[in-house]
Image 1 (cartoon, helix red, strand yellow):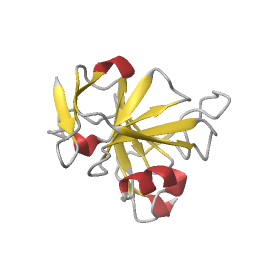
Image 2 (cartoon, rainbow, N blue to C red):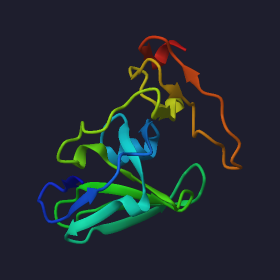
Image 3 (tube, rainbow, N blue to C red):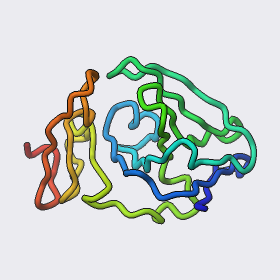
Image 4 (cartoon, rainbow, N blue to C red):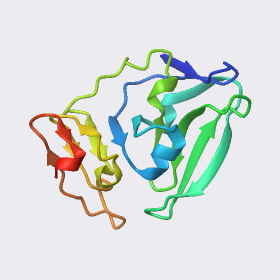
Length: 160
């Protein structure tokens, strides 16, 4: 079990499996939600997460891309965002990586990670070498797979 929780400690959780994959997202929604340039989001089967203390509140908003609902689970006392559930992907959830007690416990590499929404990344962002990078989502709203770009070396976004 890999535990995590909010800043004040009132909401605690644990996951009982490694992530299915890791998404590094540069969309404007994730930028707003994290207050940073991008979000690192390990993705788990919904059944892998167990709340061990407290009860998170939920903020729901339609995705600006798909129109499907995104549910942000957070601590109502300290405001820490904890994980996301998705109408578009009901079988999984995404945890904000920084809320794990050890936010480095899962690997990030070409075999399990991808970078999405590079089209809205900060122009000074550096895309990691070896990871599949997508301008938007991995699939479009109709489910059609999109073609990634994979850089051999770290790649500044603003250089094309």
